Image (cartoon, rainbow, N blue to C red):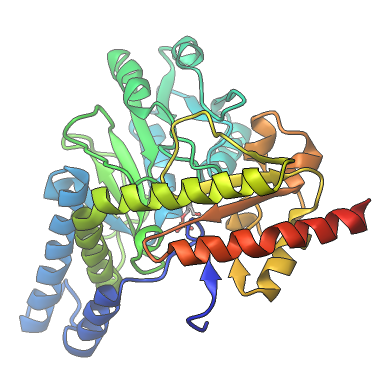
Length: 382
Ligand code: PLP
């Protein structure tokens, strides 16, 4: 992709920091040992993995021993949910929200077919769960509450701290899929009663295919992948370059978190104000809820998002329709439907997700071309 493109699909994945690429390249070139080998190459690789573990732990306000590296967030989510159920075979109830990522929701639905009792908490029109409904759903039989920190489609933040406290008060384990939150908003495991938390490095300028599960000290869910690695918690030879890249991304994200959130929020507000001023029928989803700084989900009447995105791509502007993971499917987003959007509006929704690479000039270019595209498409649709 050339420098002139405008990439606004950062919730799908982000451009890796140059520092990550350098560190990963150096690792593959010079530090190619297996961390389990009992010689110098192994020792060095093991040291790199442990340095990265410390970098992840620092970003999360966690202890080093609480971080387990995985092959991404889908795996981390599975590890948390399956681990909580395996740890407490007497408890067969799982609570999730209706707006979870498919890596949680589809697993939960699958487990339901295997005899697990499932509660899917609804959300209100702004995309938030209701804490009283969560409270009412908890029972003696509840093994785990899994509630995402921030939604990948709308950026809406769930009341994770309060929800985790409710679960803790009942002695129930609490997991959060914090994939879209980590690196964008402060996440501090020393301050809130979360038992497990998933992250993916590629959502905050690290590499694809590597993530981590925070498992609070003292909690010992059985592994999903057996083997001696990661202190028997996740078998399989470590993806050392990926882990190194993940560590560097955490370090850099921690350093720029506050400044970056402020700058990106201003850009997001500029984008939304500009769109609403120019396009009277545009609606921002979740606008009244607490949200991530970088995400804007906008419905454009009944104009199919697919067509809008095609036209935008001709202008070298890249955004997405609903979740990228569901790209190719023409089904409306389950997140937007859960918020009460009609199917037509859900199919007319574009997600713009910004990052530290986004500039004012890029937002202004979008604001320049989009109204004309919509005008043209509205004419075709009419
Ligand atoms: N959870 C959320 C909220 C996500 O946005 C994603 C990716 O889009 C995932 C989980 C899964 O991450 P990965 O595909 O890297 O395993």
